[in-house]
Amino acid sequence: MHISTFATKLINRESLTGRNGLALFINRLFVLILIVTSVINGKCTNGDVESRSTNDEDIDETPDYLNSRVYRIVTNSSAVLSSLAELYDSGILDIWGMPSRTGTDILISSQEEESILMSILSSTDRGKSDLMINSSSPNSGDNFLLKITEWMENLAKFYPETTTLIKIGESWEGLPMHLMKISAPPSEKEHNSTQKSFQKRGVFIDATIHAREWVTTSVATWVIKELVTDSPSGQGLLDRYDFYIAPILNPDGYRHSWKLNRLWRKSRRSISNWLIACRGVDLNRNFGHEWGGQGASRSSCSSSYRGNAAFSEPETRAVKEWVEKMKGEVDWAAYFTLHSYGQKWMTPWGYTNTVLPRDYREMIRVARIGTRALRAVHGTEYEVGSSSDMLYLAAGGSDDWWTGVVGVTYSYTLELRDTGLWGFLLPSSQIQDTVEETWAGIAASLKAIPTRLV
Image 1 (cartoon, rainbow, N blue to C red):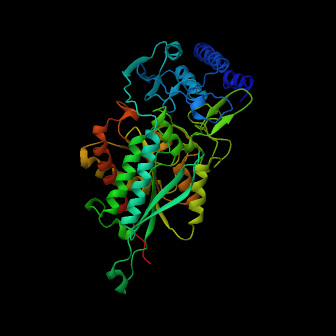
Image 2: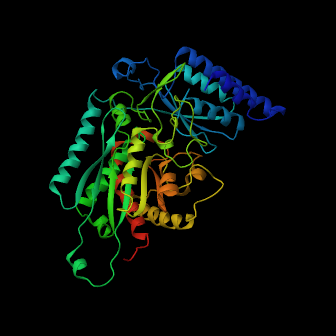
Image 3: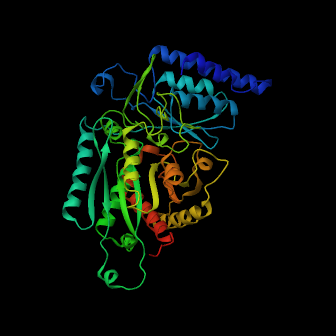
């Protein structure tokens, strides 16, 4: 968007009258000045400003998080929330989610960024915590991606009766996108039975659509392991369902989060216009149901950049085309997309908070069964509700597409541990508990879905 256009939209969005209006006007004018200054200085948080080169080594530097802090802002000030929302949309500050009255987490990595924040927060509560990040070797991202791929290849090799490794496409940087199909052949009892049997249906689970949400990869691989080894936790599920699990839906961003920037969120496609160049699209704003609505930014430097069209990205397009290819072969029962953090079990819709899905009550019934089972493992409490009510409006999400286009009733976004103490940097000591409780919740919810007879 041209700066002049943005300025007009920023200042004229609503009538600014009275004392509150003046405060809102001043805050928005200040944000506009920051945006213009940042563009002139070539600064674009969460979307590396770059030359025309596509060589990462030429344009990226490893961020230094040693002295960084995460601020949690809790405020009822409409003026402050409006200013934070403009900063979130522009990408000037690394704001972890759409600002809300319940709390907004912001990564501050420089004195300049802290000054920007403090200038806006004239009277809000200021909470902060040290940000501790373990450095990783320059090649660890490639190595870890390779290890996960090799692990899935070995599973397919040693369990050929139940597992199939499927390549559904490639990322922008040419990395393969895999999902693991896990299914059980009909038992001898089912073959010989003259009675009606259950129709097996499909379950799709994906993780790491946002690169920095590492714990979701752990959960997805744990689910694969539990199903393949026929553990007690998943007993009976393979009699009812075929599972399709994608542990890393954003391989480029995931690799980048290991190699250079632990808190990278988006994909890695190079995006440029006449003035600035940034990298990456928020893949969870790029799906084609009500694409381009609220909560999906037009700014390529924003952490929630929606892309230039629905399914403009190879990663989301790969999912869409594969699901379309399987139409008629798979009767989809459920979809789970794994995210962090917040401890929430959410249904569509993300694009609107004025209407609910037709089967919302049934969605909530099954979700509550899942969260009760999850809580029974380690006592972790989850909230249940629609994503737009519990978080914020976010058009173009994958869960909306699975319900609105594919037609899946039981479509859920799970925001895993924790509620913000560690955030994206969940310590390794909590990983095992997280994978165990999450799988318990998913398994219980799937068992609560009514069966179909054939």
